[in-house]
Amino acid sequence: MTSTQHTEDALWNGPVLVTGGTSGIGLAVAEAAARGGRPVIVTGRSPERCRAAAQRLHPIAADRQLALAADTTNADDLAEAVRRAEERWGPVTGLVTAAGRLARGSVLTLTPGDFRAALDTNVIGTWLAMRAVLPAMTDAGFGRIVTIGSVLGSTGAPERSGYAAAKGAVAALTRSAALELAASGVTVNCVAPGPVRTPMNEGDTGTDAAAQAAFTAKVPLGRWGRPEDVAHTVLPLLAAGSSFTTGAVIHVDGGYTAQ
Image (cartoon, rainbow, N blue to C red; front, top):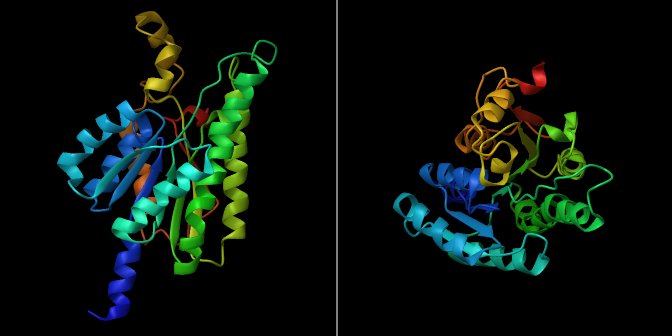
């Protein structure tokens, strides 16, 4: 194998940074990437959840994983996460921005603070994570970025105005970044989940069987999605072979937006 091939393999199989990777969709993505042989670094705001994520990833990834307490709205935290990953495994060549914040409330009842917090985590956090990894990606001429949006970014929903606005902005940011980076070897795509059973969404129906049945009746496939359903869509977009897909917004929603 030539030195060029060694370099390409190192880039194509380089570390994947998953913001919000300590639970839900982010953790499922990290597990899938680790099973595929990629080093993974997950970030989350809670040190306790970071420790739990590290324990869950260890049987899969052993010494190819790191879980760091970091705030995705803090550029210094993200820079440190990237530095730690590069120190151990080389340039970060995969990014999944799974950190998210749900804002419940109508246009009239949602507080300005809650609205800003949704924008900060979902939009500013996505933008800052991109900025943290892009210098190395563009230098290498290779990178795969997958943002996590939501079907609400295109459909909207009552009592979700702040979250829908933020996820709509994530999709727009993804498209613009994809165009800006089209000549660089870096692709940028958005995976937009529909109703997925995660800790963030558990308050939507709680344990009320009737409420759950009414909700899943709105989904053509008749069930909640699982975090693994989203991870199975994200993972191929991180691969070297996914070189002709960029600027896409891919719904993983059980047919919800097809109606």
